[in-house]
Image (tube, rainbow, N blue to C red):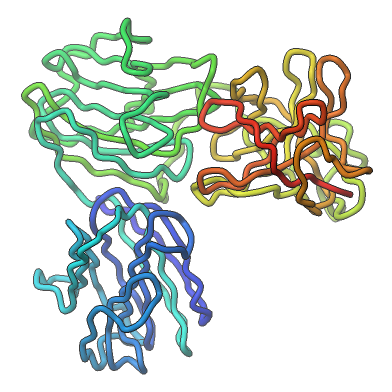
Length: 458
């Protein structure tokens, strides 16, 4: 059931990244030379990093490189391995530190190297250069197995949903977490547990379960069953992907940002899985369980003249706050940072407990997040800064520069400013409260304060 993603790469040696859940990637590429594949822990070109360069040096050689440094770990002669007029198929694998690449249909790699200090690979990047452009067809959804030992295999999520097929007698377990580990906060979805008689949603590995439903015979050891898990602003849905029927639903009053999933089997069951990251291509959309949101570029209330037609959004200058909801990003929205997954974060604010609080919009989560009272609060209704400044000035403590861009106010009427900090691979926007001498951000379900930060200036 391979799901194919078409990617075009320019002659610029700039990688395009996507997440992977298994230890291999299969692809076809049409390029005259220099098809480069990067294996990384994050969606960017940074160490640690493996690179497999196929058809380099004028389509004469292929190499494996680590951390962008020479000498290359291994080099082979591979004349004519690529072709600018036709697709050539390859695979790249990584397992226990062994990095290898081979041709489609051949089990033996043409190049491989064993790293004595391996690292986990969560992302793959592709690029071309040195005079070549490339057209790629990258396959996702490779099958893999989970043993009977209740141990999660983790991978990153690319958006607010996870699509998968499962074949096994019972006990299909899926976790949603903030890290690639079994840590709280954590959602667990158990489908076909208790000898294939019931399914549950569990929070932080605690009982009683949040949802319990009878599902006799839902799993089959001889047939793949198709499911979809979705999460938006704390609303967790488990669907039968064939019919779109909602099997289970639960709303978390204090949602956290999901960045990873895990899968496992146990209690006498082994499972076979197909995980899809790229989203549905050509499939009919599932029926919604709530009213469909307004068109993304509809004129929001209070916006003079609207966005549509030939009216461009504002840019530069003072900017305005625009009412939107459900993960929508209006044209001209100010990008304030980047999530640890590489997704852009937009400058947002929302009302909470009588305060108007600056925070962040994560579009794939379908909501904005604001920090308050030590907790991260998800807000499906929020405002986005449109056409405003993007001038960030480093400062610390209570030293808010005069004229800093106003972002809101506390419930007591104290002005709040817009700040941002770097934390765990992200650049996250939040609120600066001068009387506290910190910038607060919402991250991993918590409100975190930082004395050193950047503040948004006009």
